[in-house]
Figure 1: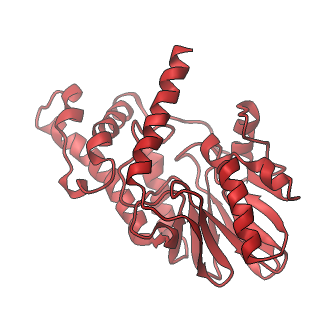
Figure 2: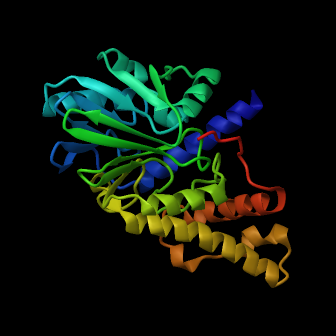
Length: 297
């Protein structure tokens, strides 16, 4: 019970922190023909697409967010919401599914994410109605194509990047948060696989990206590959800085306190989280990458 209280306290502190730093933008924004972004409070950003067949939702998040998004969708179109696509397993991204089931919507997640969701029930989460497997799948909804890219281990399980090739728009959750250092102790990331995945995302064919979290000036407008490149460089600079301190003879246990990255000092969370970010790099470099499981493509 004490561990649970500590865990809950950490996340209360986290949400209190981001609520004071998150760019204040909520509601629904049209970013391209038939493509919209949505946020209830500015903390989480979803996307939805209006197709000939119906509406496709990207990221259900939680019940309050989902209810508000359904209302936003109905203010844009009277077409049914036919699919809700989930990026990965985490409770804070893949909850709220019952709201969409009530609308007659199907919910899709990668089989790795679905297995975790089934094994780790949460009051606000439902099991996906459908799963997909492998590294790549294309879905066709009327006149719109959606590419599903599973890039293996990086963050959580079953992490999927969605690309709309005709619109040249991607939806990316958690792997990139513009203008922010990595959340706290970097939970549930495999940093080296994260680097690899970001490099592969940069090779995908799109121009614009919608990020599930975004500390930029206009978060609902999304960003592009520049923000992805910046996220990759931060991880690389974090590791390079760690090894530079080792080369100087700094005691490894002191590196989290002494390592500074002035290039990122204006990013949200720099003063609060950089030290914790370094601790994660230290643990991975000394003990090996985690989490890990066998990825079957």
